[in-house]
Length: 154
Figure 1: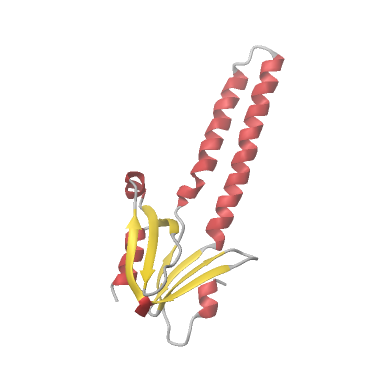
Figure 2: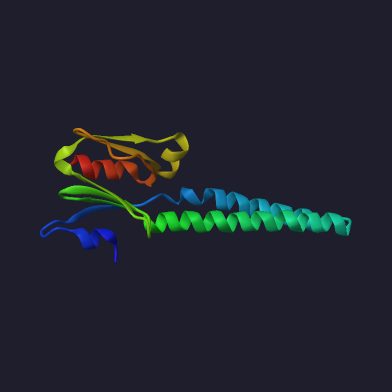
């Protein structure tokens, strides 16, 4: 059960469910491509010593890709970003949980930062300003303009 479903108040409805963008898997993808490239070096190896070296390099890249893939998947799985008709809820973590809830009445502005690559792939960073405090920066959020529109179009 999602965190937001457990904390909804009577009469409160979820307007938008945000996610971290798939771009967080990019380091894993790059490492897997490097592992494949090093396997091609293994196929071209002339001596057993060179072949063992390429096997070691390929194995290291596969191990690194697996670790970064698991870490990115866990971060994406345990992070929730929701906009309801009354508040914005941001939750991250599994055992050690960090949550931020901000009433919609307190929101003064929503900043969206997108790089050129972020605009092409539809992800960006969001920072929500409120009266008296500031929510932490939400990084690599998918469809950040949709998120902003759901917050500001009340």
